[in-house]
Image 1 (cartoon, rainbow, N blue to C red):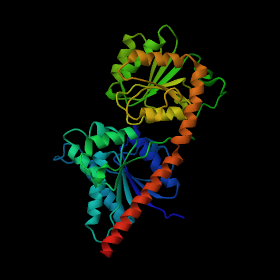
Image 2: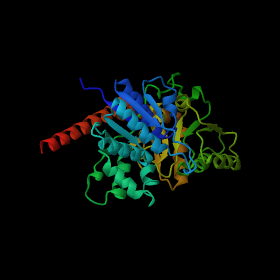
Image 3: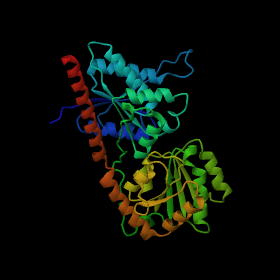
Image 4: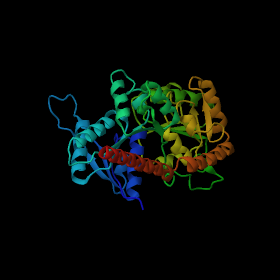
Length: 396
């Protein structure tokens, strides 16, 4: 039997993909008997509602006049060192390069300077905008490149993101280019098809064709564009759209729905935890992002047996199989997107068939146990490699 690991996980406390995956990974690893510590400046929503045996460490930096904002990343580093000194951590898994890999690499370095401590390994998982937007900005690009190289291993959530990372940061032949792909996953027990009569599908709850979208309403998600496409596809019908989430573009999206006369058919719910109950009864799930490194919300919909109509960007084609588990359109062609949406939304037998295929695809490729086992194997491989390197150094 493999020995239990002591694992520190660093993440943003958000509803977004990186926070969700990090929280679910922490809970799954703890459920397998590992000692798991999660470091963040707030309790992530997915962790807050779970009774799982994950030890939460809130990193609240000291408010001080010299600081323009509270330095949570420094508090996280200090928290890690405190836990490492008292209990010992085998490895740190940073989700999102900035600032979490900074805290992890700094904690590793500080532990290495103490002869009484064994430095933990560092795994950095890149989720998307930490490479494509934040990390590639000239203000942060050199640091992001260093963090990728300084980590014992860097992973990306899709082949597309791995390729983008290599293009941005791997300008020379160095170990930072050795990026492993470990995709996101979903809890298929929680995100599952509607429990009603399978022959009725969505019609048992929504008599009229019904679509749903979940996001953080940031500009990259293009929710106003989505509403326009929905209006094109459903003109003259009673089809409905539910929008779940909150963010900077919510007011603009609300205004666009009013301008198009769709306010009675488009419902804004705001943030919700009851996602399976909202995703499973829908005929289709809509995703219209300009950039998307993976598409976790689409994966959750597919796990619920709901097919996806999405823009073919980033890692989305790796998740949504065009013509099998959903339909893909160019991000620059709203007319084509609306046509695909119309064709699937008003053909419920076809939507149900694609939904069944979507559920099977998730079970085969993206189930929680499958991906958590990949991470677990990666952890042990990294630790074995470090142990071997230490043995060689002592022998030399």
